[in-house]
Image 1 (cartoon, rainbow, N blue to C red):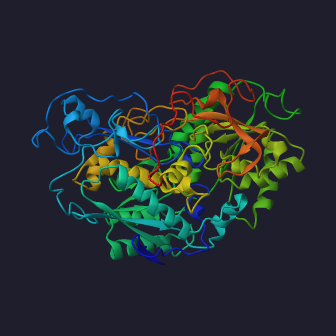
Image 2: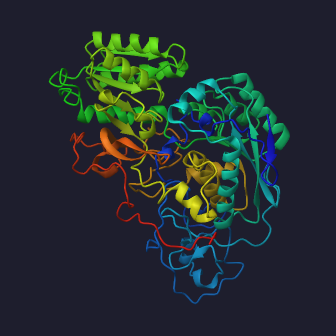
Image 3: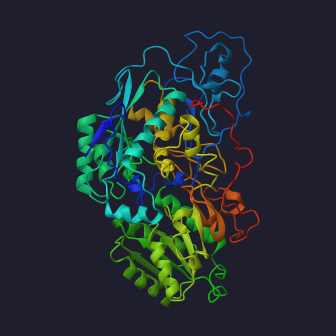
Length: 594
């Protein structure tokens, strides 16, 4: 275990891989690996108390700035008095009060748009610069001058996570990750309002592998005892013990656990937060897609031997815990409910030593059951062995990606048997991609710093957690507490609808049956794999094979999925936007780095 303040030397290990935290079932920020920008909007009505903010903030990831016209400056002669300004106060709130022209917004604000002056379409509204007493120590880890935040990184040479990352040759180190995060923090400190405080960033390297519950609890306890932080970013990829321990110590964490059932978050309110949709939410999208576009039809996207055969569905899932079995049972019940009962259900274990043997058994069972359409819900490396085995058995079914984390990433898809993956399609909560050099976290980092990020492969993975943190810190105002963090997120209207970003909201917005949502992404889109398409993957490596997004990546909320099957049709499909989608173009602001 090593740790260090951001103002000193990093404690990261040179051999560690940044993607350690984003193992096969972590459901936190893979959404942005593929390039979906995240705008956090926390609207709490028209009052301007600390519990009534209207704030928007952009994640650094895949954001395109518009110098545009969604917010215009007020033309009032009113002079603001201290009595008229309460904190937090956004540009739009100031405009409603007729105060925009009488406030000194500072260089960070573009007063022609009312938004911060960064090349980011999803950038934040300007907030009134703070003066006065911020309340000092409002919570553990918060003083009048700083907020302590710990960034977690996994142990070096974790064999399970190494199995994942080696497939796409990602080799960013903890040191590179920490150096990158320091500059991400500087970006937010420069442009967002923190009410007189700075961030004391600490890095912490875990002591156990991704599945080690004992080490996870010990690490969480050590973080709390040594650093007394307000928040922790990240956690072990394959155990919820870390988040559980932090919550028991009343420490807020973001992206610190693989996706858990809704009750897990409710029981630990207001301390545990994620960005990706939950497994149950993803199931809702997948079932609706299957019902509306696949059920009752032939397996027309399968190989020649099966294409004229009525669809017969099978499920393959990663059995990582008891919750995985429960989710599989829930999905099977859902398939029964739409008249498409599963012909076969097969679980597998994430064990590099036995995966080839498991692949043989899995494919043999599916083929024997006459399955034409395999619904895959698992890790991003196992399809490499499953598809190789299917080809060896001369079995070419349809492969339905059930919103599986990282399976919907081109970098991984290129490692699968391409004869098989030519029949792959499905649902993803990731957004249609843009050129990562021109927009997104990588481009924003270069714009702000003048150089590429040290963690240049994984900048898109480490960006979302601080984006959520900073957006909410700005929105809650000077009174920084975990309870106000929750209230800000739950009061949010949700993010700006777009093609190049996922839609996020928190709390009960009516999408998930009255259950409060602590996990962010709500919408999804449909895609298919094109083995002949060429271009850069998510880490800017040129190659052949790309996911194509139907209708340019049009996104759907629950209940909105269309019935028309446009899979494997080039018309309207987009693999990557060379320029941002219409209406999401970046603005033009000079780089602070010159």
